[in-house]
Amino acid sequence: MLQRTTSFHEVSHPIYDGMVTYKGLREARVSEYVSRNAAKYLAAHGAALVGIDSPSIDDTTKSSRPVNTILLRRNIPFIEHMINLENVPKTGGKFFAVPPRIKKVGCFPVRAFIIANS
Image (cartoon, rainbow, N blue to C red):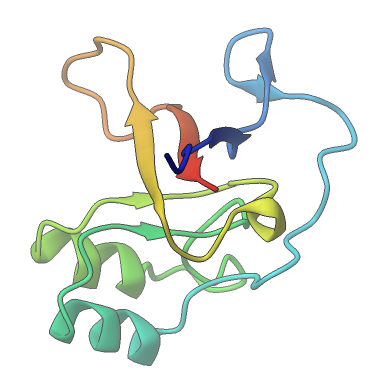
């Protein structure tokens, strides 16, 4: 009998003192932001969720937020400031983003993790 094992991968960082993230939080390793063209591509090709290891999905050097607009108009949620993505298997797992019960806010932290089959 083949035995299947699972592994837990934390992809959210700790939050201390309310919404203040811990000091020394590392910089983005994959990308600093998602481009407008990449957001259009993801939306056109059926993305159900977009995650990034950067503090913002948009280019923070500009005042506009086109990626927010493109994704949210198509009801595609996104998760920012993810960590440890390099340790997550490319296939064979389930992603969870567990939000607190908060009403009438624009954004909030989630506990994001992946349970992967190995």
